[in-house]
Image (cartoon, rainbow, N blue to C red; front, side, top):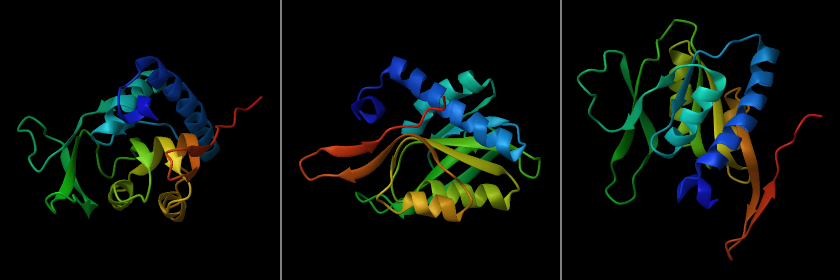
Amino acid sequence: LPWVNELIDAELQHLAAKLIASQLRDQLRKNGQQLTRVAGVPTLGSYLSVHLAEELRVPLVPARKSKHVPGRWKEAIVINENMKRTMDGVVVSHIYNGIRSNNGEVVLFVDDILGDGDTLIPIIEWAKKEEIIPYVAVYADKLYRKGHTRMLEQGITPIFCYGIERDLSNGSIFLTPPIFKQ
């Protein structure tokens, strides 16, 4: 999926946002909730999150991957991933500004691809601890990896444009296309 993480195609981003927004609206309606924020998971989730915030007409939460909180961010929260970077063994931190704890926030966290869930699970756990209602959206969900099941165990049904059923050694993938309602 080169338009996801190699060369970002704005038109495809916009179409992905429309598809995800439609599915999210169904989930929100079913749960009697209203979305209050969209937060992209740095870095590759940030691009789609801009289109989603625009499509859903809710504020976009600034986010960055760092250990340092910008001085002007007064509502900053820091969440550490479970996974260490392979090159230097450092645990990566995500910093968000503008998500309020214990305030009934309903937040859509957006990443590029769901694999094992090592990036999203700490975010979901933090959100729940802070009484924030999390939703998750990704371009693609590697359904054959453990991330999808881990999300379901957290009570989250990930929203995705494409489910990847299998990844072959020759670089081919088998996709489960999105289901459109008639």
